[in-house]
Length: 86
Image (cartoon, rainbow, N blue to C red; front, side, top):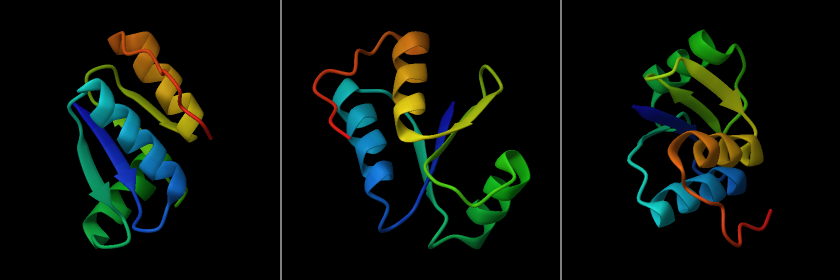
């Protein structure tokens, strides 16, 4: 399962969410600005408040940085990042 930790006003989170939605990749979004439990999970898994943050529970992979997340999903799940502009 892909869990994406996001924030309400984070443009880089929107880029990752748009990519995942566009490619039909299933994921769970957890907004750390609206959910204290999600923030605690983010800090426990990743160690800092930075978002977006992806946790792939299937592979144990955890990472920050929108472009790295998009590349990881592309490499791991076969979704190509067409026309993603940062």
